[in-house]
Image (cartoon, rainbow, N blue to C red):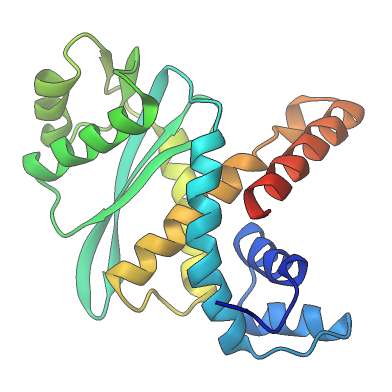
Length: 223
């Protein structure tokens, strides 16, 4: 399908939407300031269509996650119904997986563990969770060799990782459907991982070098 705008404009719109806490109207204004007049509905369709394509390519080129998973779940309301957003991040803060489910039970925990193991390419060395019983069941059945830490506050890394989702949820005035939420979360996680460069841990020059590498990786994903 042909589009009225060049690929670099489309990829830029998709990047800024998923990279920063912006609404479609915000992206529309950013493009208008640069002389590109496009409706927010067109931007929304770009983010849905191309965001999924870019996400698949970024996942294929991802260099792998760490050996420790921090897991947590929070509730999310969608159309007045409560769902649970399960999230796994590694020790470097990269999102291993994020998955919406309607339950918070043993079956849901095992389903999430299977997804995370698949994304990682194998069983992690260590998992860190809260004391939810379902995590223990999934651990015993699916990752029995992994160390399981349930110490209080140990999984703060995963809990804090939810904050970016909460911020975007407010900007979007809540998710409109489970499918829309899952698509957004997948793309948002992939873009966040690409630019998760640990700015506070490295020198300015090293950060600029890593950022340049990230931009080149993005260019390959959108080419």
